[in-house]
Image 1 (tube, rainbow, N blue to C red):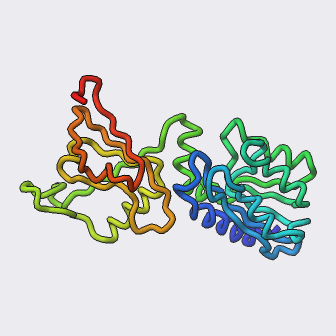
Image 2: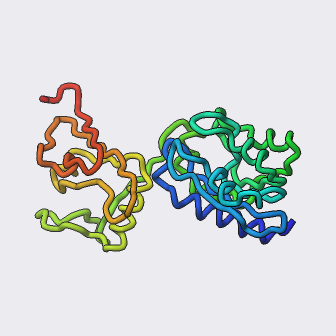
Image 3: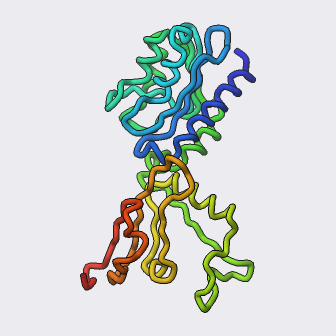
Amino acid sequence: MDRQADTTAMRRAVELAARALGATSPNPVVGCVITDASGHRVGEGYHRRAGGPHAEVHALREAGVLARGGTAYVTLEPCDHTGRTGPCSQALIEAGISRVVYAVGDPNPQATGGADTLRAAGVEVGKGLLEDEAEAVNTAWLTSVRNGRPFVRWKYAATLDGRTAAADGTSRWITSPEARADVHRLRAEADAVLAGGGTLRADDPHLAVRGIEGAVQPLRVVLDTHATILPTARVLDGAAPTLVVVGEDADT
């Protein structure tokens, strides 16, 4: 076993998984790299969208017969569950993979068990390689499954003197173009973007993702207690789905 080669392959799998951030909900992002019996990379793939082929399937298709006797590096324990797609553990066994290395155990009780199935079929299984890196790329999904709550990211911008906007309302942005690009990347990775009614009235934000080709638009959520949002508000333009939450006593 070449530890450096294992690490290189798994790091590539993590990179592949990150390509689908924001596109796979409610599923995790997963990457897979397959090497042949001689250690040469022959296939790779990642889970691109919920309901589509899993990372292992993409990688096995690319590897073809060269997967037999080889090693699969996967960022998440191969699933042992039949849902919209079949179990990846069985796909790896049928392809003749002799060794599987995964980074993070699957905490989802519906899908876990792949490692045991692989071992029962005579496949060598290793776990924990680059676990921290693989967990970092799946933070949102792991938070949801392990803790039963959403992963929440708070976006806040302020000047050095603690201001968020000019008092007379003339300021438009106080962040740099680079920071605004980061905001759109973070939006693209989220299932929902939330803003309060005060922000809607003051800034009329769009809250959709811009400048990222192929991005899945998040749900735009507006907390508007008194139902004061205007029909002309940009969040109602149809660029992304929008949910407006109002109080029970709101005049609607």
